[in-house]
Image 1 (cartoon, rainbow, N blue to C red):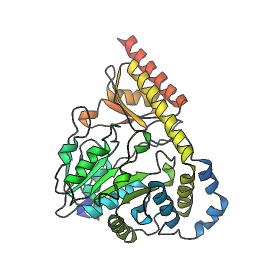
Image 2 (cartoon, rainbow, N blue to C red):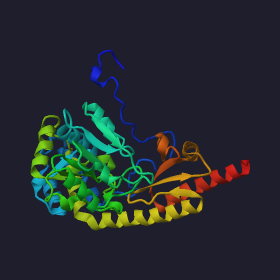
Image 3 (tube, rainbow, N blue to C red):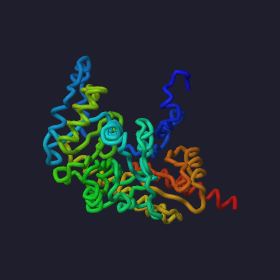
Image 4 (spheres, rainbow, N blue to C red):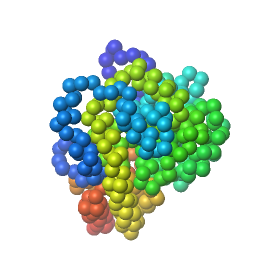
Length: 358
């Protein structure tokens, strides 16, 4: 840290992204990317003509993509905001709807960026504990005096709240924004997008990184009332009006033309998830039920960090967290059937090795 850093940021605990190691070829199951490529229409959109047009600034209004997303979710274009990944959208939401006398509330075990955003903008926040079974206690969010942020399905647990439970939170907080982060909703969850026209305090945040196989493109969006979207636009135009590249805008619009392709890939991931969960349970693991493209699992035979390190040594990357309550768990992204068989083979090898040592 230099002597010039603003003292307001000196104690900031920055977000730690998932590993992207380059030292060897890994079976990469640590960052919840899709194991499948984007649709053929997306690949066609990433063409030489679009590359040539990179000499020009992109459309800051992102009008064609906003219109396509509005049609997809049965809303007006004024209900759609486009961001450089859902992280940018969430960052703007923290800036816009919390701060000063308005605190933020979110679960104590959830997306690690939430407390970082709060610290970055000097926002007072409270992390509300998950229940012993790792579900979100939605009643704890009733009648709060600030912005509420809930990942649904939650990460890293993969567990969901019902739309009915979220609607109760919305009703009990009419004067504060409720942000529902739906990064993983397409893998078995239920979207709150249908509530946008009913509740002017609801902001639904989604991403192209998971179900639409475009993590490398950095594209996210929010659905909300026209007034909330205008607030986000004000911050975008005060920060980086050209926040999405021409190529990404073209690919994002193309992806919406092939919903059947993506639904089929999500269904395949869900089938692979079910088979992997059952196989891990047969190996003695505790595996939470998941509505996401990952599993949250622990073994009674191997310490969580030890399992992570031994899998990595065998060329399989998963995500380990050091929070005491979840330190025995690892989050395992669902890959192709072949990738998951590599994971299971490595797990069997580790368990066998420990049995022989005993």
